[in-house]
Image (cartoon, rainbow, N blue to C red; front, side):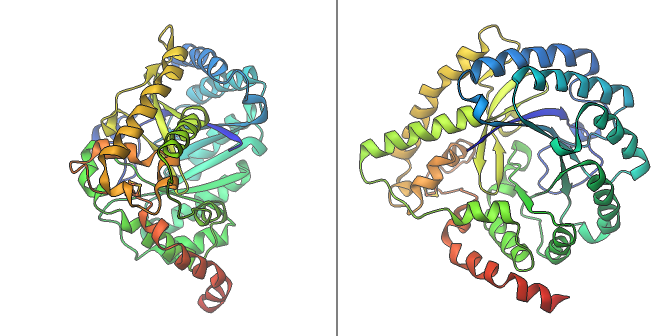
Length: 382
Ligand code: SF4
């Protein structure tokens, strides 16, 4: 892992209606930025302190990726954009690292509303360090196709990296996969994230539909090689622990990765774990029923955050020992590497596997097949 990824909750407002969205209706209806303008300076100075203390030794070798998430950002005022990117840039410079900044959008606003904001961003950051996170509504893809097309053409002028995300729950359908797949190919988009927005208000819907992740992904791969992700997915190995010592050592390494390579910070400054899976990161935040580890405004936030390592190791070992399904599972090592069993806390039945990647683990060969046939399928369809 050569990146440190920090997701900052700068927007909870959105005009989209994606199924499986992590945001509640009340949050989406707000027209205000999640971190108000008056708080930006303080927020980023606290983040600077937290970040530079957590990553004292290894940060020079890594690229810092800041993701401004979760909702629509281009609804906010020009003044807000100036303030946000000025403070963000000062923070980035303080780290003395290479960086990439990603910003999320529904892609549903008219280009003439978004372009002035994009020009403001360019006053602070170069195109080469910018990435857009376009959250597409797969169920309504045919309805919004033209809007997405217009938006992506605009984003290509301002962002070097294009990333498509799509949310999931039981109500997602395979119907528009081909359209999305063609969209990815047409615009050379090589990163697709399947968002497991597992939250209290949609827990049942998302929790029970884990196979759909694989079905959608496979459907899209039939005509498109979403390269970044499927290489990660294909690297998943069937791997079991052989000794108790190996379990402990493996979990310790996994926890170092979870703690030091990515985290989610809410607009209030609460720090939450952000699980790194090959299909996309999963935030364990308060919407999903998890308590914050610490808060960047707290005096000893760094110490509390780093000290949480012991409890995280203990939690994962406890989950493993109590969850008999895991004992004979062929995918233990990969699953525990990503910290996925921590999601068990969310489910009612503790002895049931709710790993959203299980189908990926079980059907890797099918994905291999899809990839080798990609070109032929694509030619046949066009
Ligand atoms: S949570 Fe599921 S995939 Fe992970 S080790 Fe346990 S049984 Fe296997």
